[in-house]
Image (cartoon, rainbow, N blue to C red; front, top):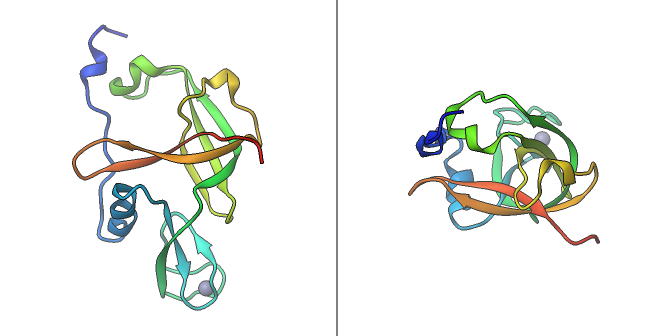
Length: 142
Ligand code: ZN
């Protein structure tokens, strides 16, 4: 890829009204997921209906930020110029200790070092004045 591609900003997620509590929590360095107000099922990403009981009532609740790598894949192609300097990079699916799964990034860990089931913990990357993204880093075994 051309030199200078790293100056292209990475695309930011749209902070919809539905996701505003998630991003507000991330600014406070807190990871939250939705919990059904009726049956307690945790879910991420946000959904209108509970998969457990079809309730529409839910609240955002903090979770530990700890989990394990459930699966991952390594991107070798440049699909967006903002990521050109980072290929190859991994996209990981983290299963939180509480159950919900997030598709995210692993930092402080090269693609060759990632292992299924490795323990990880959340950290946050500030991408703009409004948007901080939860990403994960290797955690001590427990
Ligand atoms: Zn429910």
